[in-house]
Length: 512
Image (cartoon, rainbow, N blue to C red; front, side, top):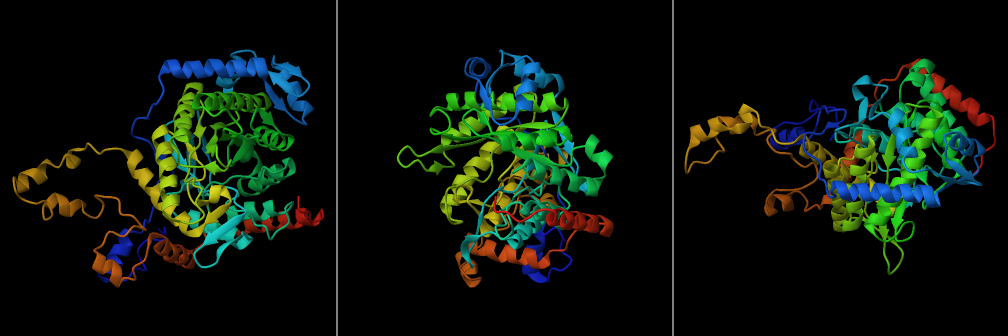
C-alpha cells in the first residue's frame, strides 16, 4: 500500500507478490464511468422535495446565537420570528441554483493531488472525529497527537484515499483550545493531499484559513478552495452558534463547507426513510442557502450522515438497509439540486476489526459508491460508531477504497479488452493461462487485495495462520516504518511553526 514503489522489494516470488500489492502512483480522485443506482422515481423525488418545502415554510429551522444570520435571511425574503426562520416554497432552491457551483477544485499543496469535488467524481476521505484509537497491540485507548500524525501518514501513503481528512482522531493529550493548530500543521507537514479545517469555534476556523494562507498565499486562498470543512446540523432542524460561526468564516473566505444533517433516525428524525430524507433535504437547503447569502459562488456540499437507532436499546446501528435507502435518495436529490454530495464511509458499530466491522462497513461503502457520493467522509478507520479510529480497520478499509476505484472505473470495452485474440489462439477446450493475451495482462487483470489471503490452507498455515486483522497489523507498522515525508518548503514550515507559537502563547490553555 506504500506509494514509494517497489525499489526496496526483495527478489523471488514473495518480492514479486509484495511489489504487485504496492501501488506506486494513484489517481488524485475517481472519475466515475458507471451509471448511478437510482432507487426512487422522479415522482417520488418530487414528493420529497414538496414535503421539504412544506417543512421549511410551515415549521422552519432554528438558527441559534447569531443575529447576523437572521438578518441575512430576513433580507433575502425569509420570515424570521425569534430564532425561527421560515422559507417560502422554492426560495432556498432559487438562491442555491443562482450561484452555488455544481463542482469545484480543492487545491492541495502538491498540485498533482488536487481533487475535483462534484459531477461524476468521487473523493475518498478518512474517518473523522474519534476520541479513541484501537490496535491489536494496545487495545482501545485515548488518541494522542502521535496517533493523529500516524493516521495522516497512513492516509498519505494509501493509494485508495484521495484526501488527508480533518480530525482523523482527537489528540486528547493537547489542550482543547489549542490542538487544532497541531492538527492543521500535521496535515500540511506530513501529507501533500488536500485537508479539512477546524470547525469547533469560529476563531479556530479562522486559524485554519490563516495557516492555509501561509502555505498558498492570501490571494490564492481568496480565489481558490484549499479547505473543505464539515458543518454538522444539530438535527432536528437546528443550527447552533458554533457551527454557524465556522460556516461564516469558511464561506466568507471562499472555502468549501459540507452542510451535513446528522441523523440517527428514530431519535433525531422520523423512523421512516421518506420522513428522514425530507428532513435532511430541508436542513441542507437552509444551510446551503446561508453559504450563498454570505458569499455567492462559495463552494458547498450537500451532506448527510444517516444511521438508525435500535428501537430496543437506542444505540446507533450501521450497515442496515434503511440508511442505504436514505443515501440513495439524498444523492439523487443533491443531483437535482445541482451541488456535490457527501455521505457514506466505512461505518460500523463493532468494537473490533472483525466480521461485523467488515460487513457493516462494506454495505455502506458499496451503497455510497453506487449512489454517486462525491465526498465520502469516514471511508477508512471507523470503529465503535465513530468513537474509535482503528489502525487495522484503517488498512482493511483502504483495501476496500481501492476496490471502489476499480468498480467505478467501469468495464473496459476497448479492442484489447474484447480479447478476441485470446479466443482465436486457444479455441474450444483449451485454457487461457498460457495465452499471449493473458501473459500480457496477468499482472494487472484483477484487483489484488492487500489484506485478504487467497492461498491454499497449507501455505496460509506455513505463513503463520494470520487472520485479516493480524495481516493488517503487519501492514500499518511497515507503512509507518517506510514513511517519508513529502517535501515542504522550509520557509513555509517555519512560518507555520512561528504562527502556532505566537498564537498559542497569546492565551491560556483550556479544556473547552
